[in-house]
View 1 (cartoon, rainbow, N blue to C red):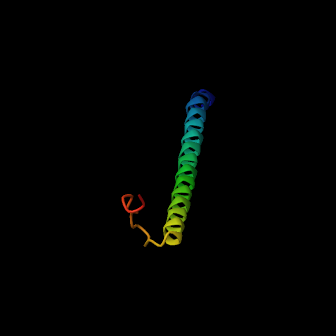
View 2: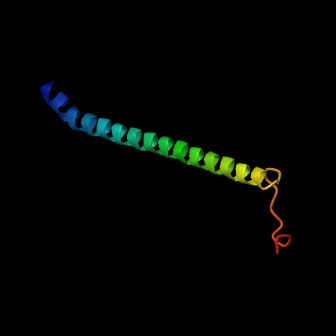
Length: 68
């Protein structure tokens, strides 16, 4: 009986270690995606504010030929 328990300890330990590593990777990916989404949102807001200050509607492209 003790031999069976001793034989199961290493695989259980490796399985738990694997679970913690995968869990950490998934959490890091989730945080990275949230940070990238926040950066993209801030960039879009900044571009919209710049377009509004320039008198354009958000999403409207400036006519580069008109300025020269």
